[in-house]
Image: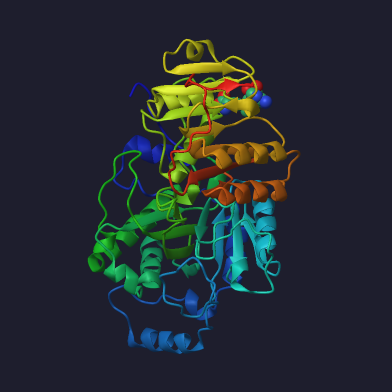
Length: 484
Ligand SMILES: C[S@@+](CC[C@H](N)C(=O)[O-])C[C@H]1O[C@@H](n2cnc3c(N)ncnc32)[C@H](O)[C@@H]1O
């Protein structure tokens, strides 16, 4: 490639050093003291004590654990994200990461899901849920029917959450070694971990505030050291923890995810979970995401791009684990000045891009042989036969985007679509967003909406046709398409 797809902001140091711990990424701690005090207060005293090494359990610890298991509250039947850690005295907090400054929006969304849910934001980019989020389809009166999620069997997947850390255990340790022992001890009872395939475990080392996008987050080194030490301990017992070294940018095929969120020097939240496909159509999209620590993707490019908008497109490709192949025909609606078109050329090696806008693209793109520029209204563009991908970054009211989704999905004009839905002001418009999702679903598409790190007051819709049809509503022989 003539373009080097370099780094996401928080991982630049790791990637430059090409460490074998490519899967470890950290978050910066911006309010460690507050988080420490807050969390310590919620930990039962006996859990703060040293519990022995992973391999040498004391009889006392075992009997205490048995007592705790007897006291375990029954889990809600509609728990969607499966936790692999044995319940000891749950329920345990779940954390979601989000882009910093969007904590309130994520909390508003979670409240729409379960009005009585207990929420707090211990630091920027992090939301804590006490108790278990439930599916609104499970017949629980306490939940709102207006959630964007319509499939009860799908993992609980808030739009504004970049990553989920379900059912966290809180552990303490004065040194890296002691913290690692406590983390390993918190997950050692997992029978799924024992039975899992070799190298199927991903370990993400995180620190709060990572979602502020800082390049050198405070606490990163310690988090890596803890994660390395945990991996050393676990690999003695579990083949799943014997990881293979990854090349820069390479993605794992892991289905089991251990997330270690270092809340302060001596305190960590630990989540072990299985990652599930969003739907059978979206089989490459796993949630929680085992490939993107804290849900952050590598999106910075070395080459000068016509605009920075390409970053959110690359985030969608990373999250989806899918992007256009060089042969796929892609239409880019609202393409000017050409950030997305340039990303298609340089990342996907696209051989045919139809770029539609009222304004011309960057001169280099206008003369590129793979780019066909169509000047006109994106909303009246008609393809002459079904395309592989439709991308839209048109600035328009959300209601118009719903019309666009309806037009393209009802005709099956593209197998896959990535569409930004932009909101007026600083708040999301939930109703048109929900309508866009439902409209796509009603026409046989699976739909997922995500607020990526590089989305401001907008959300990215990802749509995929459930079955591929040969319908072609266009009878024009010109095979680029036209605007009316
Ligand atoms: C946010 S910019 C797109 C940026 C582009 N994705 C990139 O990567 O450089 C939105 C674009 O939508 C275009 N646009 C807005 N309304 C349009 C319409 N009705 N038809 C065509 N283009 C439109 C604007 O001209 C503008 O270039």
